Length: 316
Length: 278
Image (cartoon, rainbow over the protein chains, first blue to last red):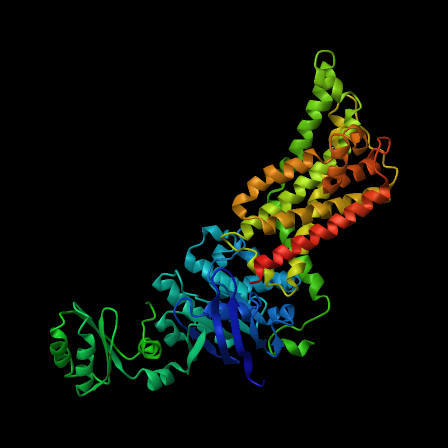
């Protein structure tokens, strides 16, 4: 277990009920000490369920998660000492001030009064929240509340911090402030696991990214490795007025020099190409007879990786 | 154990459980300290009005009002333990069920406490213990009121301190457990309805305003109310505070309080676990 801090083995979760939902379908992952690890996938891919199990809030149907060697199902109370959690929604204690939110969090983790007070003051300084220490959570903007949640989550000095969709609902400025805060955790030696459905976030923040969809792990690697392996293609989306003749046109597209693949989508065609230089006129000409009404190009990115792996857009 | 915590974690110690529990308790104390006024009003208003109407106003109109004859001058003595039981009951439910229903609601505020390094059931038990403290205060407030308000002061007869403390503590824990069971199983939107259809009826039929022994003529009711935990709170306090009034045997009261405490406590904790762990 030398430098593996989170170990996920054959994890499955089935939610029984009127509709049986398989949220996780055999996921294996290892997160290394000190890295920022991104779980990238669309809504409903199983990211939040994975975090829920790692943070002892959801019980797996089968499989195992170990945090620093501690089984989270067998010893949840012990595991909770090692983890910090920032959930998707704002769970700040509405009956306490910002300072008290952090102070009592420290007390829950066994800090003495003076130790908890010092730690809270230190964190409020670090996260530039000192001025708001007496404010109530309801008086804070989404971005500030998120920062308090991060400060609270690391107050007991956890080894791993789990962030579930940390930038959901944040304005661009707060998002960048949050990214800076997360990157700052690295120098404290805190391992970060975050889920996101924003490619830029995964790309910008993560050392390694796992792409998940339908409860399965599709790919794993550094953002660069993923782009090199799966996404070194530009994706050209064509919206057509008539989709009926799409198959024949796709066939024709594949014959064009530089086109690696072409497939029919609900709205038209999707063309994968190594390089678009000089290719566009031919593509436009070929698709013109089906009534081309819109064309958009996605440069190689984690987005094209995702499209390559799942055949659909992250936002679809 | 300490090496389990990894290179930068703090070591895991034996008193971890108690320190976390203390932390949760201090948090609740801080929150209560902010709303001490509303708390006193909430627990004091009902016994205050009851004593005022039935033991201050009624005795002064004994001639013309047929209800006043029923209440009678000794009614205060019957009422004192009953009102203490009601205070315990309402305080327990208001202290656990109401906050839980918001904390489980949209805000999910309970999450940070659930993530404490203690088993999740301990978070639920802390809620019950803290509410028990409020219930005990609520019950004790009734005593000075019963001395000052009635036309004829009602003095409690503390002949058996051990019994008084035991009954107070058990009743308060029981009320908190009932609050936990309601708060964690009832949909937050329906909490008001539960007050009307569960809490109010069991209070009225909880031998609060009459001793259980006097139900002889309505035998079916005498048996039916045995399934009502409030009955044992009222009767237990009757035995401890006004021993002159007829009451159930002490062993039966303590046995029933224990049984209900275990049943409702388990039910409440199970409901709590179900709400926070999926």
